[in-house]
Image (cartoon, rainbow, N blue to C red; front, side, top):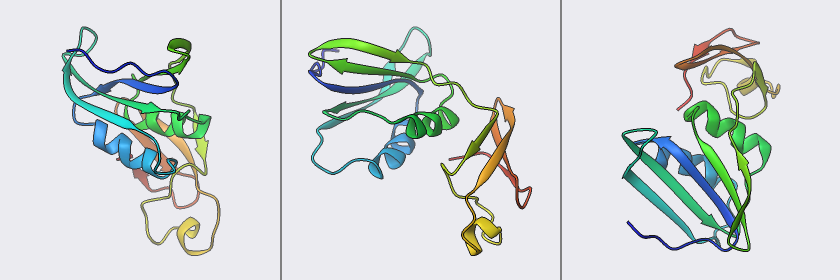
Amino acid sequence: MKTQMLNNGTVIDHMPEGMGFHCLDILKKRLNGNETLIVFMNVPSGKLKKKDMIKIQDFYLDEATSTYLSLLAPQITINIIKDGVVTKKINPEIPHEIKGIISCVNSRCITNTEGYTPEYDIRSKEPVTLKCKYCEFEFTPK
């Protein structure tokens, strides 16, 4: 399959099949609406049998978003493209703890009711399971 090359932007690769739209939902909060993007679904892969991929022209991921995406798809690769050349390849690692990236899913948690910044310990990396430091609720991010 031939696809348009990016001159400048980000390629998010090696997402498990079906995760492309979940990752796109996260990215929508960071995009300004003027970017050209392409979502590939169920692309044949040597590393995974099938994968999803996102290409975004003139957009570069910040570290917090890269970390969040690694929670959804731990094996992703993020390629930064400048002038048609991959200038940086990022394989984000799941941290031991995270702070402020996502909201606690427990609606009664004080991070949702009293404005505290959510903080989590990573309880498991396969599958990714987070434990809120405030309410101790455990969940898998989606």
